[in-house]
Length: 113
Image 1 (cartoon, helix red, strand yellow):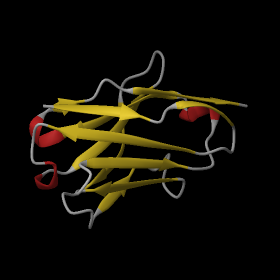
Image 2: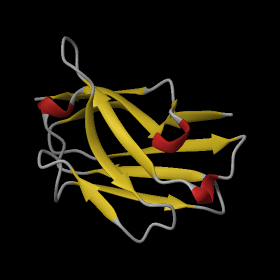
Image 3: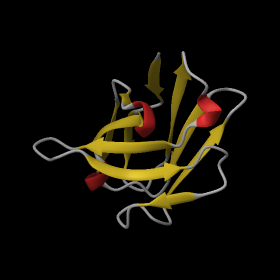
Image 4: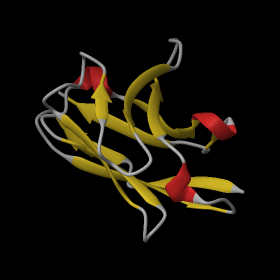
């Protein structure tokens, strides 16, 4: 049972990245999923969530209208499309399955000005 994030990297301000989180070992389509992030010296913060069939999404105010969460239940994968990136988006990004209390190991996103 695991979540594995990928797609992080270094981009300039205004750029885009798409994060992926591949799930295995459980029935992915039964579970809502979330993305969190943690910047150096700061607490982990919630970024976005999506329900089990993708019909409902919610976003933190800090990323609303810039980030989009989506999922493909055939590929057991949840995505985070990040556009108009800002230096303050620099963090390690984690996916999380709340009902399973399951975290991925995270992927680093660095945005330079």
